[in-house]
Length: 324
Image 1 (cartoon, rainbow, N blue to C red):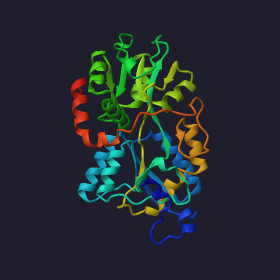
Image 2: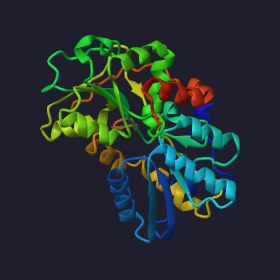
Image 3: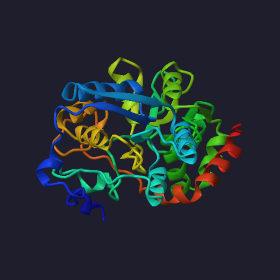
Image 4: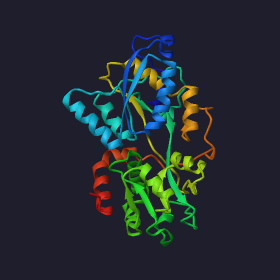
């Protein structure tokens, strides 16, 4: 049960010792992540202000490349990561079932139960897949995912590649489950293009190469704040909450550092940083970015469907959009 994590202690630790990490922690921490490198670095810099003797090394790429790298290291018996933070809950579930993840130490933090997956991974902030619209290109603003099948959006659509992007995999799996594969068949006939990643798709949307795209909300809000002609549409069916958990590898030789970093991400400092970076913080009472609705209706989680059908999702998507 998710709520059990909030009351469970690491073996042999008292509540007082588990709640705080000594300020003189030292050593090198290695984080594998698919998150935006500059955003992760901002949190790393804030963490290092609190723990100046800790060095944090990053390996950053798309979710598929990050997990492939870790899989290869696990197969070789030499995993290098202490922490993993990627947009694929199903991968964390697999690692947990193989007993490769450490129990997270969230004692005393009051992390919402909905943000915790089992006892080995958890969300530190929320992001949603929505519809981004370039208002210079489109005069008819879609209100729903279903609207994108209409002729008004023909050859003006795009989304990232779910074989590369974990967030796009959430979109593909969720919409295939909720709207059927016929929905993506209709989008393919309507000329939807597939780009490699969220940043590439966002840039092309801003530049007017596309009129609408299925993208993460935080990146769109940033571009709006810079003056880009972008509108964020939270679809009437519900937005797609993209799981982006963080977890500690059981093979880590620096578990105290890794646990301290995870706990730091729930601190008021880190949660405020997330809001400044346009993410929705996970902790109650943390500030919210400008323009974020007080309540965001979401589609039901498709995590179980994606976990069971991940290979098929990739194959069917590749066939529909002729991906190589």
